[in-house]
Amino acid sequence: MKGTLKTIIGGAIVLSLSTSLLTGCSSSGKSSDEKTHIEFFSSKTENAATYKELIKEFEKKNPKIAVDLTSPPDAETVLKTRLTKNDLPDMVAMGDSTTFTDLSNSGVMTDLSSDDIVKNIQPTYIDRVKKDYNKHDAVYGLPYATNGNGVIYNKDKFAALGLKDTPKTFDEFIADLKKAQGAGEIPIYFTLKDAWTGMVAMNSVASSMAPDQFSKDKTDKKTTFKDSYSTVADKLLTLIQYGHKDNLGVAYGDGNIAFAKGKGVFYLQGNWAIPDILKANPNVKLGVFPFPATNDPSQNKLVSGVDVLFAIPTSTKHKAEDEKFLKFLLQKEQAQKYTDEQSAFSAVNGVFQNNPILEGYKDSFATGKITSYPDHFYPAGFNAANIVQGFFIKKDKDAFLTKMDNEWDKVVNRK
Image (cartoon, rainbow, N blue to C red; front, side, top):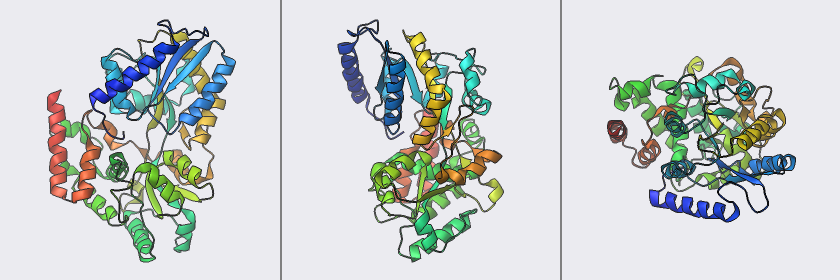
């Protein structure tokens, strides 16, 4: 999600990882301590601390199994590189992305549809992750945590500006931004040095404005970005006017710290950023609300997706141990711990998000006013994030939409 590694770098990571694993384990997965080692590969670095605590608890209850967590930067690129080397891990935790769909359709993930553990997951999320599989009844990944991509705001600054109700329309949001700017505040704190963060704004706007079938219609040559994304581009250009002096010079991690320390009234990010913000400043008062992309409140929905799902590659030599660890993670106690620590929403039955910070998203989930990430339907290999980043730099709408169309066509035509 945060860029692309060159294959040689991915290979180096794999080589280093393989060497370290071989040092402690034999080819059977047994180490000198006679434990069976399973590699748990996570595509997110933010939740590593929570996983480590859960792993520690699991190993305490299962002393003959050791879970080795691998959580590299640019994990999806590393995972694809490992696939070419027939070196997939024993268990994978990642988002419901195009990469996961491609891996599943290539036949390298175990179909869990006949396993009783599927009953632990809310059916809505099971239906969501399997809709793009070639084998439509298969369940290659079990949804675990879901997210909300919207607006995080500083409640104290919001109140100081005399604002009472969170905006329900785009014009109301712009009015709030103008008021913040007039008061000498940074209205939106952007972190566009990391290209992927621009997709938060892109998805927020496009989710309610671009046609639902855009990706399919684009591939079928029934529409173009120029036809369907013109107003989306206009609104992105409006939003960037309410940033700070160095929108393209601040990275995501630094942005979390800056926002925690009072820079900015609004922050276009997902709920996954909240733990890091609170870690930098436990006393900051935060709230959230769905991004109001249009001036019709009934059309504005919370962008939400499966942030973490668990999958077991067919190549694993430790399926029994993998399933034991998987069932442990799906227990309510463990799922609740993950939900609480990661400010996430759970796909596990009977596990709820009770953090008052996230109160602003509850109505969206309760009423079903949620929608998917548009870029989750973009073709693999289409690097929209870098193109969007370039758009924020040059602010050339026509060039942006033309490049989006051309690069999409190149990727689709290569297949």
